[in-house]
Length: 331
Length: 269
Image (cartoon, rainbow over all chains, first blue to last red; front, side, top):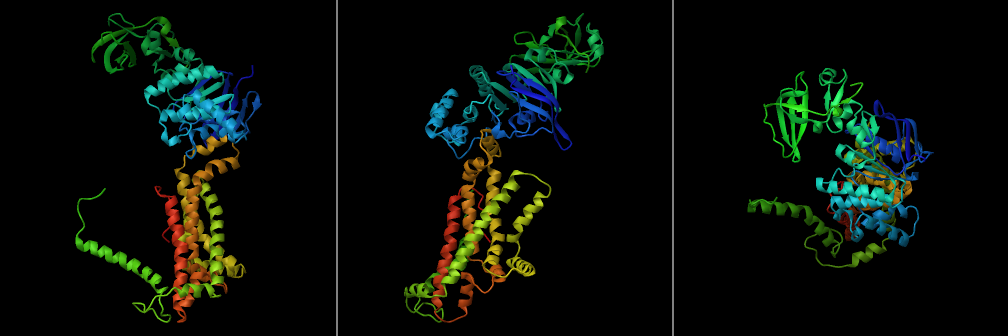
């Protein structure tokens, strides 16, 4: 099967800034692919390279086997849900959604029929006559989605589409996007800086750092087996352990990482890790504690709600099953 | 926020007198268009008549300047609309070295005294062997008309979400379609306002015109020449009313179409 999108050693440099630097990437057709990374890591530039708003300074980009490296945005069969939605303020919702068909020369009746269909898909069937300014943030987001889907793109690009929504709406939209993607069967490429969002929605994800892909894989792989210290820290804020501590915990002399939620409270005597509690943070679903372990390492652990919570300064022990320790070759 | 402190009576009277000083002379212009006395402006007018409107209509020497003024204002406004829109698009959409400096250079013609603009244009035209004609007047007027259109358009463009042009391209629109369906409708009222103000500004311009005109005169220049002649004085007032209307109506219209926004700029030259 031809992959939806492939990057072959793609770079995008702005002067001396290497926004995207030698990225190789394959996105399978019909998958939900997340690009995760902090701001400035190159993930949005990668998305704009797919949509065509940026041209690569090196390498080639294929969409369904066609080399699109020099194809302008309006000739690519991909559509984007923009971060700020970019709805047309002078048009009502129906005209916004029908725009992609209008510029293709589809007649009024046909394009309005299709637009209403799309609005029904995002549950906004009764909002066609409103102006974007009369909608809430969540509704605008849905209009942007309907507008991008009207051209039946084979790849839908989403640039931090949930960033402006409040937490509750964001979680509801995550479920809805995932359902929509499965129903339509088209490829979604989703840019986010929220690791929780990427982990819960994506089939595959790429973690970006400084213009390069630090790791690419399924959420389970990336979460459990971070390949670099950056990934370990950025995805799920793992404890990053230097070689001497890894060895003291029964591993080889190498860097390793340990998820805070795989650590359990135990008595200090004879525990793998022990030390005084230096900080305590209530998370709602549990408590996050940090202890100062021997050798100067700060180790974080998550204690589920309902379990006794130690006090700050109290010396406690932490234990884990050996399989939870993920050893890497390098830092 | 309204203040609880009310202004003292003396200040109110002062303000009233100030406003009266500014606007009463305009009322007098209207009044003297109807006076029966044609040699001097005496107050109160000895009698009132509407015959000067008919006299003005039938005076052959009014029509050429009138037509010239309309022509110059229309063409320089059209020129300014095209060039002003293009330059505002460049300024609002892209960043390049020296952008702020160029922005200042574009605004400069309206900040410079008209005498300077006029003199420099006159010497430039002479140097290039361009004969003083309707064309040179139009070019002179276009220099400041562009500023008005530019100021209005650039303010609107900055307010527009930059993403909408990208969204349009993303949805399959070519550059012309994006301009036609997205940019123009959002820019429309700003361009209309800018065009109206530019037209009004050009229609009553005297200084730059004096320097760039050949033998022909525009309506304001005709009025200036007419004022020193004692014959049929109220005719000048009738023409003044025409000039007044031709400038105030576009300005009010421009104000109306952009009300609510703060982007009508340059109405004050």
